[in-house]
Image 1 (spheres, helix red, strand yellow):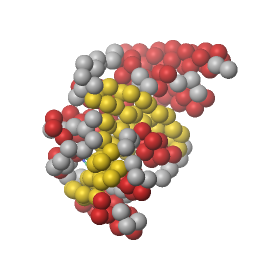
Image 2 (spheres, rainbow, N blue to C red):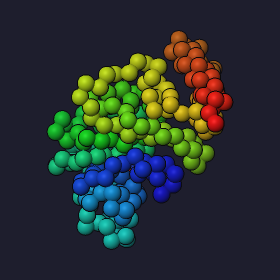
Image 3 (spheres, protein in one colour):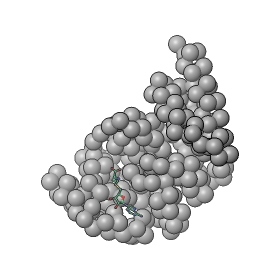
Amino acid sequence: MDERLSAAAALFPPVEVGADIGANHGLLTCHLLATGKAKRMWATDLSADALGHARRNLRARGLDDRVTFAVGDGFSVITEPVQAAAILGMGGQTAAGIILSAPEDRLPAFLVLSTHTELSVARRSLYERGYEIREEALVYCGGRYYVLMQAERTPGAEMPDERTLFLGPGLMRLSTETYQAYLRKKLSAYEPSRTPEGIRRCQWLREEAERAAADSACSP
Ligand SMILES: C[S@@+](CC[C@H](N)C(=O)[O-])C[C@H]1O[C@@H](n2cnc3c(N)ncnc32)[C@H](O)[C@@H]1O
């Protein structure tokens, strides 16, 4: 478990039955079962080879009898209600596709989500399915920044504006050095862009960097 998976586990609520969608190595599932945070888990993956990896890791730790392994796309292979699901380590479009295509009666109360790309697409998909982002965590791990989100199904949750979807409603409460360095890195990625969207995003990042710097200067 590296810092990214540890942060995901910290955001995963205690459950009777949980799911790790796109489980691959299955290390998150191992951790949730071993720590007692989940009594049972579904470990699913589009790839049978990847799921074989999870199966071997769980068997080696004597945890496989508490796991249902299923090969297939997103929630479509989960045949019972789960209280929380993790969707980690995919692109934003893929994760959004999994959330948007999930059958209504399979959507859990909580989702833990982290995507490598297109965070605003992933965040939008959460609100489109009636979730609200409760918390976001930022970790720097293996030379990369990762944003992890915990979202809860919340009747009446309102879609945030474009700026909030881009910056992240949870990240916008941070002012740490790591967050400021993350904003500088994102700004350097968007600065060469001359499209209206790229220019708008640079402006949001500059404003947010100023806000975070001012808040950190004020904090004791
Ligand atoms: C990079 S791995 C991430 C593994 C683990 N979740 C993590 O974050 O360390 C992404 C995994 O997602 C799986 N995957 C991609 N699209 C999927 C989908 N629509 N449904 C289920 N699994 C999917 C891939 O086969 C792959 O094993």
